[in-house]
Image (cartoon, rainbow, N blue to C red; front, side, top):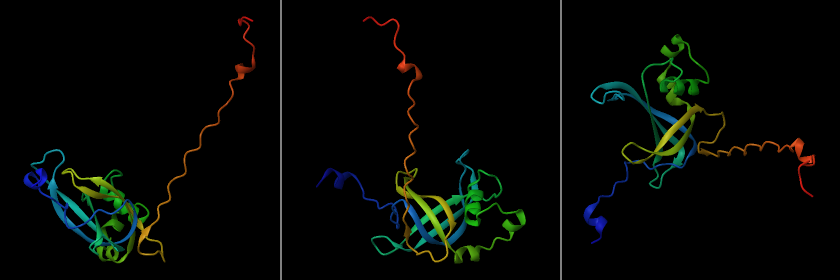
Length: 174
């Protein structure tokens, strides 16, 4: 029996496989209120939202849709708050307090979303997908992965000739 067979266990990291980095057309499956340990004090539980998106057409090796999860706080309005960044991306703009209060979760669940994900590693060392952004899907867009075009390389600044290079060195021996 091998060393690893005797001393280690195999973990798949969960029921969902990790998708390649890219943009996927998804549905919002659920938004669940949850509690997590506070970053400042792990003994204190803070309120969070767990946003779960599932791909429409892309599936893993078992035929299951890919699942992407994003945790946010419950406070909207601060420019750096994850909930504000997520909702602003989904709405395409900043909502007023009245618009935010009237936001209909069922409408969000019915829509298709362009979810940009990257591959990462959790704090526990498991491979995961990280949601980078969520935007409305364009009408008529297919339900699968959208090809992400790489950015063109940055142009190189022009190399200017040294204006003094054409002058003769008066101290040169010759």
